[in-house]
Image (cartoon, one colour):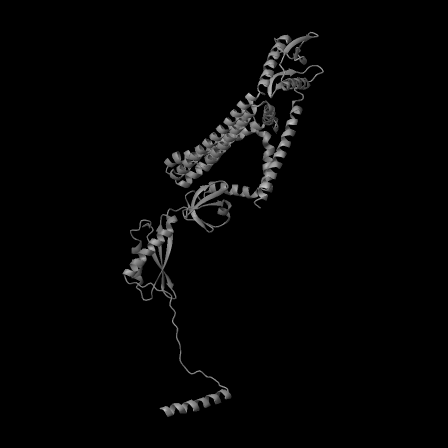
Length: 535
């Protein structure tokens, strides 16, 4: 297996490279097809655009440019000294390179206000400089210098990537510490951490892309491919290919729109946190009411901000009705669960059967409600574990809300004392055990109920009211410690299960067979007589 895995990895990687090369080559082969129909075509040398030629009557712009580009590449590859000049043929200036007719300049090639002869001279100078520069960049000295620059750029990119990763790690650690120390209303949310990681990945990708383009532009052999790839990427991103209503939008425009929506979500969440922690906290409302108002304000701002963004973007809202129809069909066919949780979340937010800060029992889970969203509710258990509960469970099943419509909760402590104990005295001792305990409220007062006669004890029940239901297990434990100490101090017996066993004596009727009776008689005669003689 250790020998097969590297081979499999190399084979898979090679197949990916071949497939990527095929797709890239096919995409680059489509570049001339995209260029067809354009009134101009570029004259390039080693990937650098010199100028553009126009379309003539009977001659397309692209064939003219292709012919000129082939001659320029042939001259550069030959390495011969360059001689570029302008000659006049049939009253038209013609640019010649080493005796070869490169390009005929016409009135359509010259901009308004410039003669065709002036345009030809300008292009001649550009061609002369470009050919000499291309020949210079093919010399060994320049290639060595370009290699050193490329290696330096790669090393610099590695160092910058490491520095950016270190900075992002420190920021994340600071966010985590701030989230642990600062109240959750002002602490950075997880979305901010995801945004930071996404920004780091985007910056790293842009950095390596810039390094790849820069290093490829250093060499004339790779500059052509980098230019084609750049043109392909620009065409793919900048061309309007996504129709929405009467307009079409490019990929870059859609990415910008998505980025604006993401920024809108961050702004609305920040406003929600500030409203909840700085504004609503001063009103004296309870935590559940503050959370409800903050959630309603958050979704209202998202709705208004989305409409404003779409209007500023120039998108007619009536043109996206088809998407609303598709969304409705999707909800009807495959998103029933999400729709159910969404509606349940709205019911919980507005009806408020549970609120943030309530202490609840949901199935086997018991804890404090920390967050309510339109899809789920977060409960923090007594073990400080976060449980994400779908909202529909709060409406479809029984939920115990210890904090609903009341600030205090009653707990029960079953107690058994031995038969013969003075119940009046025991009742006073149990009530005394709850006095001066800080978490037991005085109103309503504690009470003791006689539940009945048990198998081994007189069963009582101590009822006390507490103001912190999440601490009920600690309170029960402390009260039981107090009760046990008081009952032992007053010699009140706490019974344990007992069972009495009675054994009755008597004769047992046993029937023996004749053979067994005869054997016993012989044994008695034999050994009985011997015993009598010894006596």
